[in-house]
Image (cartoon, rainbow, N blue to C red; front, side):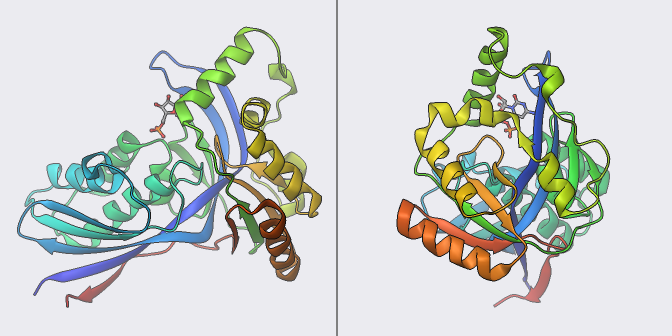
Length: 300
Ligand code: C5P
């Protein structure tokens, strides 16, 4: 009997993001704190005799062969004893290219789902290597905790004890920030010597002791370049900040911005107000206490 697996693929936000410097391989060394949130995509994987098929319910994501979920399946089968095929049904809710890790989370969900379905697949360490090769954020979504420090290019993880659930409001300004371009802008700014000095940037240091500590140390280096280039991002940050959410940050290199709230009702009110005033997509969600696990069921 063919089996299917359903995997939820959560989005992430960065509670802290410091870009340390350019490496010889073109990537940047960074220190970040990832937090998974409930907003997520859903993938249903069904084994087939051969090939990789992708069916997307949601916005057009472009050519399937460039899709990270498809590339993850291909990498998984390349590393398997008995390569078969898979049909991937992807319900897309995380906006693409927003700094929320949607593509990376989909890729991790495929790797986790196929591991649950296919005997003789790559082991945990091989899976981590495959994940890191697919994208810098993939290892976080393969990890053990919804809260983790990422170092290296983001793939070297230190899992942290999850903090209690916080309500989160995400604002999605209608602009696309290409990650590579944002890193280049940061390099250019630093090369000119304009902008914050290295010594002024704060470290994530030890694991955050609680949400107050997170709010006190919240920081994202991309806020020195992205809002000034994209006025919509600047407006989103100002509007979120005015609702009283703490911290208010850009996620990754953007364009999504978010605030956290201790009271779910306050978050709901803020989401409604922001949606009315900005007229951009606004999502009320919450932080996760654990990363979702695949659910196997007999195929239809
Ligand atoms: O690894 P990922 O595909 O997410 O990265 C997209 C682009 O962002 C890279 O091609 C690189 O230009 C830039 N990047 C970087 N340093 C990182 C992560 C990404 O320069 N740590």
